Amino acid sequence: MFRITQYMKTLLEPSPVGPARKPPGPVVIWNLIRRCNLTCKHCYSISADIDFKGELSTEEVFTVMDDLKGFRVPVLILSGGEPLLRPDIFEISKRAKDMGFYVGLSSNGTLITEENIDQIAEVGYDYVGVSIDGLKATHDVFRQRKGAFEESMHGIQLCRERGIKVGIRTTLTQDNAKELPELLNLMDEYDIDKFYLSHLNYAGRGNRNRKRDAFHQMTRDALDLIFDRCWNELKQGIHREYVTGNNDADGPFLMQWAERNVPDQVDALRQRLQNWGGNSSGVNISNIDNLGNVHPDTFWWDYTLGNVREKPFSEIWSNPQDDLMKGFRQTPRPVHGRCGSCKHLAICGGNTRVRAYQLTGDPWAEDPACYLSNEEIGVDSHEDDRLEMPNQYPNQRFSDPFPMKKSSEKSRENNEITRSKSKDEAIQYVNI
Image (cartoon, rainbow, N blue to C red; front, side):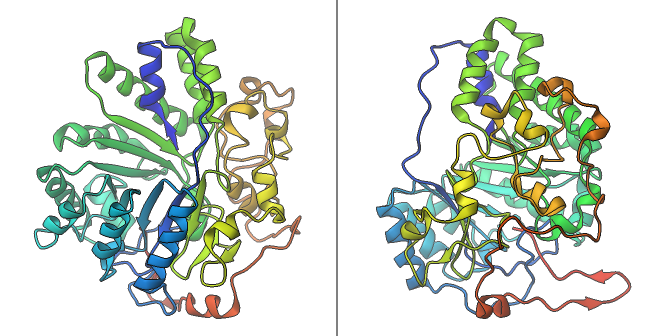
């Protein structure tokens, strides 16, 4: 996650640059349930509105939570599927809060209603994030359900009325990029605390819909808009959180913005960004799925490190022998192509590895979604030599540099989705 507001504040009110922070343990994004009531086009978990066998029981969740606390995990993001469909979600959430975790709830917002808002408020979530992927018509098409936008915004309004910190999360695509200014205006209309711009990652349903990924110029325009809005609000004394995720080129791009607007602060900003270090999959970010499988992050569901039913998370995460994890934890990471030659590698950390893997079969290839030019990253080669954006290799799979470690046969069977055909392909999967 790239915290734009945090860095903008240091540009507006300079202070000495401190040492790099080392979190005590990884943030755990926990997909407690795979079932969801929507059918979102960019879902990474490929969920459905059905019950999935083999999901962790309440007691198993509690056992894992005890291990996470002992491992000094600071943050739990409870997700899905739609976590509010899990009958014990409030029991789990309250226990997590009582144990001292920072607890976030990641929801599609449609199930936040008058019937459960008091329970949500009683838990005391540190943050509730709701996915909004366009204005009314666009969002409803994304969610493949009429009325979803109004339901989600109503859920957000209920949270604000109860004093719950709530934010909206937007996945940037070609379909919604033009609506970004109006989406940002929802912050004013609903007095929303946080805006999270998520760059599309190639996993789950997002992988199948990558043709609609916002191309490089659209991404640059979107970031410029958010940078300028955040800066202007801070100068007016308005403090909202603007963050982005899944494209760590945002760090060097902010540095370029600073060179134009506050050049005297660029050196300090560069040091802060290097302290951040960019992508932290497999290091400071982790994922547990609904069956208890542990992954480097939420977009690596094809790669399983172990299962919490068989070994504690702390033991799985500490395994020094896993090839992919060794690469994630190497400094610098073993990236090649333009990423390996990039002068900003210490800032972005090689960006998002799953996109490289999905397009080439090599997790250490260059990230095709990096929207910086070769000139901007100090690479002396022609732009035509870059890895093409999605669909260059629509049918070809490349040999793996190491075997992908799949879930167990039983886990795959339990997570199996039955596809059906109708007028359009009936994609029976859902988003968090």
